[in-house]
Image (tube, rainbow, N blue to C red; front, side):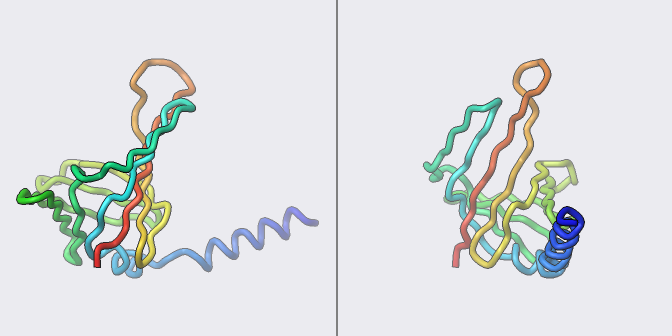
Amino acid sequence: MRIPLLLFVSGFIGVCCTQPPSDRKELIVGSWKTDSVYTYYNGFGFTRTDMEETPLQHYQADGKLKMTREDETRFFFYSLPATDSLIQQTLDRKNLGSFKILLLDENKLILKKIKSPLFSGKNQERFEVRYFSRIK
């Protein structure tokens, strides 16, 4: 009896807490700076906090992404095809990166990117998690 009730409650919370696509687009629009990047590979993790070289990301309402670093500016496209994913593309629509949205609210954005293994073999896991804060 406990398991069906637990599944019902979990499903209900999941449905109630899912953000509609329009809300996600409104939340991501704005400027974000990278606070840190956590890299994981087969049980070993490392967090980088020296983010001076990382470009600022400016998500625009028209689906364009402007990245700036000092005097350099580059434009890309972005889309939010599902409730938990973000895709970045070059101007000629080539995939730049696909991310899972772990958190998106008014002040924080956390993205996870699955990366391919560096070495051949089975049971390898490699990813990075990027932590952003909104620039006001």
